Length: 269
Image 1: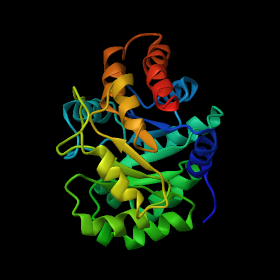
Image 2: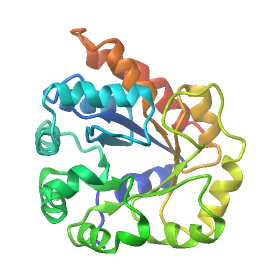
Image 3: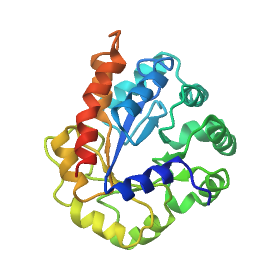
């Protein structure tokens, strides 16, 4: 499998003894025109990877912050084709940060999965994470991604039975997204105490790095999680910051300033 930006970034971090900071934002919030600049600001803040959420009307795994961001994006006319065009504009800006398309299956099924994969690769995306596609039913989709050089990001949850972990972990490429707690996305006051043991279990069967997300929202929490994982994912806190300053002329600067301390916490662990 040919190396792509995700592989290169994690290899560089490993050589430097650093952990990854993965930032999530909803594509199209506050607008698709604003999305490339926001991604650029996250790259400038030092983020190692960006997950771009594809807006969807029924995001069952997401809490209210991202649900509302999806609705705002849809109200502004965001679509999967528009998100892919935004990825192309991100690359046109000269951004080399790895981009993972974070999506539910319905939008890509309607678009056509093979067309989605070829268009995603052509736009400059590096990986795909399909939240609600059962792994046992994803063999064709995963093979298509591999054929076109896109990494197949796997989700593992606290409720995943231990006997399923080997198959899920071994089939992942790019990185594994470990969901640190039950429920939906959203900021939490503390991190789960089960993270060290769960990450250790996954690592016994994985060749891809293990990143932990869900509920992580400040530098102290990032630091705690990065002590045990290969990377930390922060989503709702960044999306909330974008919502807070959506109409500000210096939106990108505010998002960069908000994110930079969490990047430092991840890299310094």
